[in-house]
Amino acid sequence: MNISILGAGNEVTGSAFLVSNGKAKVLVDCGQFQGGRREENKNRIPKAMSPRELDAVVISHGHLDHIGRLPLLVMKGFSGPVYATPATIDVAKLILKDAAKVQESEAARINRKRMRAGEPLISPLFTDEDVDKTVRLFTPLDYDGPHPVAPGVQVQMMESGHVLGSAIINMDVEDGTRERKVVFSGDLGPLNLPILKDPARIDRADWVFMESTYGDRDHRPLDATLDEFNSLIREAVKRKGKILVPSFALGRTQQIVYHLAEAFHNRIVEPFPVYIDSPLAIAATEVYARHPDLYDSEMREFVLGNKLRDALKTVRFSQTADESKSINDVPGPCLILAGSGMCTAGWILHHLKHNLWRPETTVIFVGYQAPGTLGRLLIDGRPQVSVFGEKIAVNATIRSLGGFSAHAGQSDLVNWYACLAGSRPRTTLVHGEERGRKPLARIIKQRWNIDCDLPFTGETLSMN
Image (tube, rainbow, N blue to C red; front, side):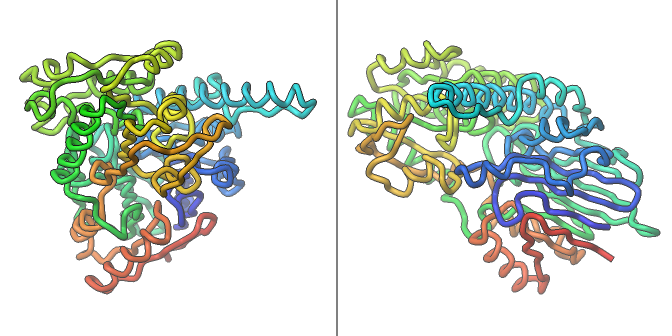
C-alpha cells in the first residue's frame, strides 16, 4: 500500500492524500493552497493525482483548503464519486460556488488592466460551470458505516469536531492478504468547541495521518479568550468605534455570533448593531440551521429555549455589495463580521481600507493567518499595509484571539492520539508547518517511543 502526499505535507493548506492498494486509488481531500502568490501558484493537479485513474475521492470537510482543487480534478477528467457527510456536501457547494465567483471577479479585474496595457488575458482557476459539474459527483456518507467506496476500500466517517459535517476518515484498506486500518484525522476541533460535538475517539489504527497545525502550542483557554473578547468589545463601544472581525464564513462566523448572543443575553454588554456582511456566511448559517442533529447539548438548549433568537435582534445581514458599502456610513459602535478570514479577498478588505487608519477601530482576528496574507501582516505589527493598491496606515487596535480556533491545540492533539497509541500505529504528521510538526513529533516519541514521519508535499510513503 502506498500513500502519496499531494498537499499539506510541510504546510497547512492544500490537503490531498492518494491511497493506492493495487486494486484502487482513492484520494482523501483535494484542497486548495492558500496564502501568498507563491502558495497559490501551486494550485494545479499533479500527474501523480491521476484524475482519470481515480476510483473515488473522500472529503473530510468543506473548507477550501480541503476541497478547493476538486473542480480542477474534474476538469482533468475525474468522473467518479466524491464522498462526504451530508452537511459537508451542503457546505462544499456554497464554498466552491463562492470561490468561483471570487476568482472570476478577480480575473475580470486583472484583465481590465491587462487589456489597457495590451497584455495577455488570464483565466480564473475554475468557473461556476466547473463547480456545477463537480457538485453533481457528491455522494453522501452518514456518520456510520463502514461504507465501501472503491475495490478493497471501506470508509467510516466519524465526528472530528472542527466544523459542521467535518469527519475523521477511518479507512479499511485491503493490502494484499492483509487489511490495514488507516485513519485520516482531517482537521480536529478542540474539546468543548461551542455548537459542535467533540471529536470521536479511535482506539486502533495501523497507520494514522494526523494534523499538526498547532502541534507546538495550546490555545488560550476559551474562558480567558471570551473575557478578552468581551473586554475589547466594551472598550470599542466606549470609543464608539467599529469592530472588524475578518471571519471564515463557515464555522467561525457562527461561533462568534453564538458568543455575542451569550454576551447580549447575559448583559455583559448592551446589544449593539452586528452586521453579518457576507452572503456566504449567511448561507452557511442557514446550513447550520438545517442540521441541528449535529449540535452539542448546550447549543440545542440555547436554540430550543429561544435564547439565541431573542439575543440576536440587533443582527443585520448584508446580501449585496451596495449593502456592504453602506455600512461605511454607519456610525460606531457596531461589529462587522466579513470574509475572508485571512483578508485575502472579500468584503472585509473595503472595511479595512476605510477603518484601519482610524484609532477608534478594533480588528479582532479569530483564526489562523497563513504566511503572506494581509491578516498575518497585520498581526505581525506592520505599521502600514496595502489594500486595493492603496497604502493604509495601521492605527487601529489589532488583536489575535487564538482561543477561538477551530483547530485542536497541542494538548488536545496529544490526548486524541493517546487513544490510538496503544496500537502503536505508524504515525505521519501532516497539515502543519515545521514549527507545529516537530514539537508534536517529539512529544509522541517521548511518551510512546513512536517515531513520526514528517513528509513533504510530493513524497510517497509505503507500508510493507
